[in-house]
Length: 346
Image (cartoon, rainbow, N blue to C red; front, top):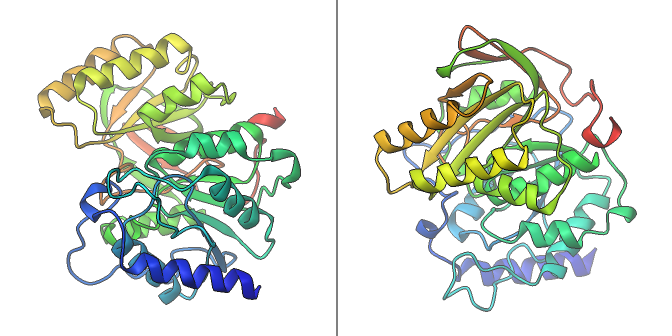
């Protein structure tokens, strides 16, 4: 324990004075007004938060503030030893990460610590695929009660957990994103985590009522999930898709790649979240999504608050949803319960 604290403290001190600029991290949002109050947002059974860095080094200012916000909300926060370790080539690459064996060590330690109720990723970036490939899954308990929260590059980890039947995947804001979330999204985030009803009005590209469990992630990472053959089941699910940094042609290419790979086969619906940092026009993006809609025969919607944006809702992979009258509804449920089997158990 003393060794753990010493390593964590020393790396944290280094972290205070180094790091990539916040503007380089697309998960960092400009903070306006008073700090967001996370008191009561996480349910009462979540008492201890484990923080890991599965991929790239997070921006220090937002990371430190995100940790403080969770602690101010009454949560016990454990920052694992290598979370704030500075990559050697950070000055040249804001997506830099430390050696994968150190990231895996933190992940496995956090997973096997039974005091932890949730693992929240510091940031996405690039490198989660290496983490997933090097985890010794056989030595890990399945822990269906353990939440794992992150997005962007962390899509790789969440999809692997869902496919393998480990943990309780949550797609949503990283530590770096917590400080910049819009105050209007917090009540919805709280309702989702507490198992209460959540409703969001959508914009239809092709209307249609449906229902199913939900999976959410970053478009380009979905293509890598398919290439890595994780075995993620999307049939019968409402698939939420977000994108960052891709123009309309890239978005079309990624969607076509997923179509060819069977990713959208027999899905209940496709719902697009935020499409940000595109360096393209809204008209071109809209045209690309409409063209894609013509290639599938399921309901397709836009306008869901998920992705690299201040309005970023947590998505619980264990919860089912239904779409009626162009509105997605997550009915009230017993938060944290396993009402349906995971992919690996089917």
